[in-house]
Length: 389
Ligand SMILES: [Zn+2]
Ligand SMILES: [Zn+2]
Image (cartoon, rainbow, N blue to C red; front, side, top):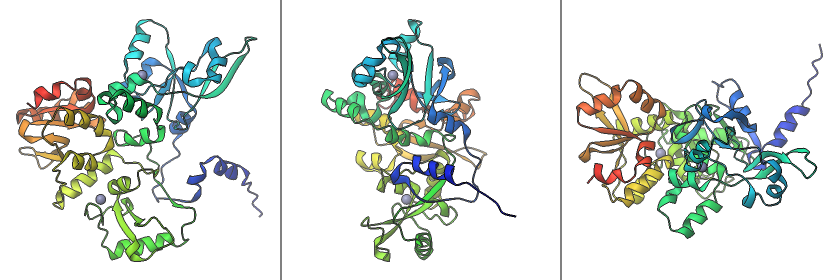
């Protein structure tokens, strides 16, 4: 029997991918089902405002990390297409002031939620003849969101630096910054061999990892039980030079530090796994300066850390575990100031659970601890000074 298969659609899909992401893809064996919600969010979903939640400060739709904007630009459309920066509506990503004003005025109710990071947004409106038009335009990010979230320390910067952050706002960097907060955002673990790499790259890398006992050469964590989260890099960037002196094995956390522009994402469970592994192996990262703290911490915590640095608090400990009585398990804090019994957790589930049941916070409270979510701290940054005098 002859099986006819038309590859046209596949090739068309490959063409749509960004050129730098082209290459030979392979997937881990436990490949999850295609993520339909993710695919819909790439295009954008029209929703009423009350379907977007801001529990984490960041806008979230069905547990996914999204940005959102108003599609309809009315009879202003032609001016917007002409100069979107000047006339276009803004793209929001936080529970911001402008949004509250809009709600109070009772005006805008529907928004497009999306996780598209191209910077081009589908907008609609009317031309001079009142014909309805849909067109893509580059919309800018909302400054009020930047300020409230303290993205890249925005709220603490001088006007010139603020403008810099605003003008160079990069959506793909933005989504990566907070990927650790969104366990659901993308479970699709694709790993790809970039174009131009030797065809036997996987073999080369596996051989080198085995030789080095699956130890991360960045932070020293042993990854033999988590091999798929150890990567091999080329020290001088030349991927055709596969001499051992030019190779370096790194865990996901170290990989993201070494390759900030890579498409890799950090997930909360992986972050916690790495933290626990390092603790078990006696590798707790010691910070003696704020630079160390920023280097070792998840970028999603940086907005809060900028405030801590500004308030001149003690340096936080990262991945601090609080032993619980009669219980083998320890409560893991993402940031902790043991002297002040003050801690911050970023996992939305744990923070939610703590709010609903109160048990984690309760256990900590018994031992005199105050535990907050990142958003609670960002909403009241001046409180940090009083909590840690
Ligand atoms: Zn906003
Ligand atoms: Zn590492």
